Length: 307
Ligand code: COA
Ligand code: ZN
Image 1 (cartoon, rainbow, N blue to C red):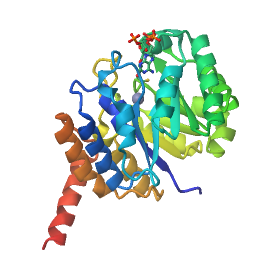
Image 2: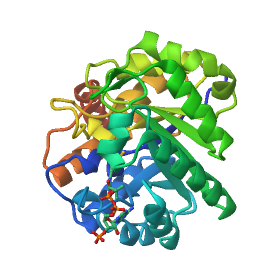
Image 3: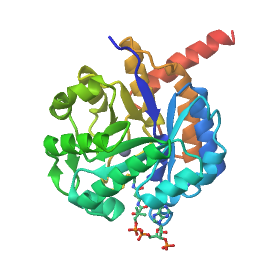
Image 4: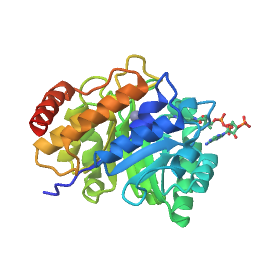
């Protein structure tokens, strides 16, 4: 069994972009420092998008210049278009992720382009990033269901995935943007891509809106996927889906993987103070399904350490 699973923390981007409170650069950096201290190997630190569209992500260039442990952590940034790519490159970003949605309406709402245009732009950016020596990734968003067009046909996701890999993407992230997937749907999308799963070309991004994110992770693991996005404390939510409860919580993901014998390099208990710190920064109530249990274990360990 290939037992290493890479956890890519997206709280500083996907989590913060939908918060009512906009954090200062120093606060975003503090959050990232806390995550790095947990041993998280990869972090999507921000996005280069219009500050009018997403004010929470303004100043990502400055943030990148000040990131801790740049040699050890795989930092990446989301870029929606050529302008974003250029800003990311100027800021010295080493890995960029483009985003294309599997439906027409979602592309229009998110980045104001048609699906066909988005595919062209993203393919161009993948090639450009490769030529510039940057790592290139592509999100296929609303890969299971679109809030505007309903269920997404798996064949569309599969085609877009192969297209982006063909264009030079090092990885495609199959994203359940609104948390509407279920394990059977995950299997339907991923099984025909088993060659890509085995080759490590795919990652999955689940939201926990309907409480099925961990079950979806299990289905993806069984299909051979060994990389997942998650967000500390489940921070997040989707601006397009009222009532969405946020991303898969990093502590839930790490605890399940750890219990199943997978290696992540992250101590699940170390995530307890991280959740608390991010809660203090964002002002919202955070914590995945396992958080209360983890807190009790962490408290016990602290008592023993200080006895
Ligand atoms: N970063 C910063 N500014 C950008 C930009 C980027 N990547 N792309 C465009 N802009 C600026 C332009 O310079 C222009 O500025 P101005 O009004 O001062 O002249 C303005 O934004 C409009 O540019 P335009 O190319 O017409 O963009 P648009 O209005 O069609 O918006 C996006 C397109 C992609 C910039 C915008 O929809 C966006 O940022 N969306 C973010 C989506 C997102 O983050 N979703 C969540 C993650 S999936
Ligand atoms: Zn998301």
